[in-house]
Amino acid sequence: MEGLQLLLVDDEPDFLSELSEAIDDPDNVVTTAETPTKALEILEQSEIDIAVLDINMPQMNGLQLLERIKKNWPEIEVIMITGQGDMDSVIKAMRLGATDYFTKPFRQIEFQGAIERTRKFKQLHHKLEKVKNQYKFLSDELNGKIGTQIIGSSTHTHNIINLMNKVANAGDTSVLITGESGTGKELVARGIHFLSNRKDNYFHSVNCSAIPESLFESEFFGYNKGAFTGANNNKTGWFEISNGGTLFLDEIGDMQLNLQAKFLRVLDEKIITRVGSHKRIDLDVRIIAATNQDLEKLVEQNRFREDLYHRLNSFTIHIPPLRERKEDIAHLAEHFIDHYAQKLKKDIKIIDSGVYDYLKNLPFYGNVRELKNLIERAVIMCDSDTFDLRYLNNHKNNKKNGSAKDFTPETLNLEELEKNAIVKALELSSNNKTKAAKLLNISRQALDRRIQKMGMDI
Ligand SMILES: Nc1ncnc2c1ncn2[C@@H]1O[C@H](COP(=O)(O)OP(=O)(O)OP(=O)(O)O)[C@@H](O)[C@H]1O
Ligand SMILES: [Mg+2]
Image 1 (cartoon, rainbow, N blue to C red):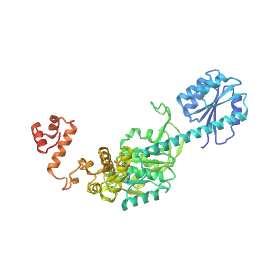
Image 2: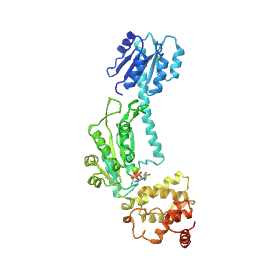
Image 3: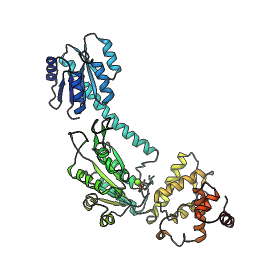
Image 4: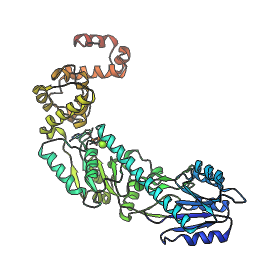
């Protein structure tokens, strides 16, 4: 931990100089105040780590000042200076959140001891925050949200894992991950983070399509209390949160152009300051960006900055769609069946081989996510110890309702398309046939006839 910023508050100037002299660490920055009003002014303007307060002061007593500090700057640790034998005040101060105390007339060693304990306390607190973050990742992992395990046996998947291992410890090299929706871009990004020596720091994920320009600075850089109206507390920005770790920029293709320029500047300078602060913070952040768009095309259309593209593109990992690596399907399916069987407490002993044949022939426009959801639904339906096709057959959603280019001869079956349209309309209208008919632009009678003809069970 680097040096501390200390604020000493006492109404006796001589005592303040004595205290200041007793602080022997040259890395610490010491500020003094003879009145609580002055102390509050300093607290507003600087980033104090530890405040040392005298309990007996004429203007406002130390306990009231302690209360103000804990309310407005809860992250500041406070040490109290009490009169000899004034245990009542000590107890009150501890209840109000003071970390330590020492008595007046002071002995240098007691004072230094209090500072040292508080410094350690702050350090521990910092570590605890990190552990909490790791714990969150661990529990996410248990919930199957991360699953740093990347399942698959295709050459594509082997290549991807190989690239992840190579880039993980390559300093702060940016990584661009491309691939259709649901191919596992975020999983690969988290995997790189956890393979790297940054793993004990934060992996912070940001969805770029959701950042309005007006919030860029406050979200990415953070701000200090009072920096603007409504800034009632200090806020750590995303760069600072992920300092030493990884900042994951999801949907980078959607980042607004003027934000791209600001962002690029930070990547070049590697220094930020919070809004309302002058303190420069050095950045050591690995950027991993992901997109399902063709960034090169966006560059041609002037919708993405070329310089930023090159900056991010220094190391690219492309994840092919699942339909181009069909060997992975069986492995993934087996993994997800086991996962959900365990989670949903189903005693599945056998997986019928027909399941894999069937799955291999699905187009999976929604990629691994679609396969995962399909298996989850099927495992929920499964009521025997053999998992077979019966449980998968009501899977209708693998036909993307996308553009004409997505239709294969298989999906160009008119009857099937009509049936899907009817199912969708009924879904949207919560099975209200009059409303559904309106959505389909046909009469209620015509809808009834079609439902009957198709033998749909509604
Ligand atoms: N190879 C894999 N092994 C295990 N699970 C996978 C694999 N690939 C993807 N998944 C799982 O599929 C789901 C979708 O993956 P992820 O969210 O990483 O996709 P994405 O590419 O970021 O999608 P989007 O573009 O929609 O955000 C997740 O639950 C993920 O854990
Ligand atoms: Mg994603």
